[in-house]
Image (cartoon, rainbow, N blue to C red; front, side):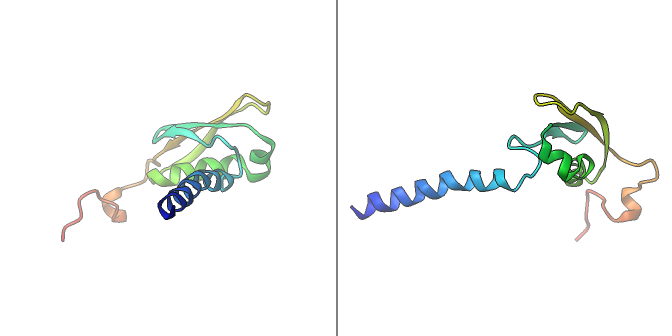
Length: 103
C-alpha cells in the first residue's frame, strides 16, 4: 500500500514539473524552436507584451551570441524569426571565453 502511495506521489510530481516549465515562458506555450544560428518563436499577444527581441536574446544568450529579429508576422499561426550572430569585433581569446581552459 505504501509503495502505491509513493508511486502515485512520484507520478504526480513528474507530471506537474513540465507544466511549471511552460508557465515560465511568457511568450508562448510552445517555446522557441532554434539552434545556435537562430530560430522561430510562435507569435502570441503575450510575445508582443514581453518583447520579440528579449525572447530571442534569451535564447541566443545560451550560445554567447547576439539576437537580431529578421521577420515578424503578427497573426496566430505565424512566427517571429530571428538569427543569432557573433559580432565581427568579438575575440574569444581576449575575452577569456576560449574553449580550452588550462588548469
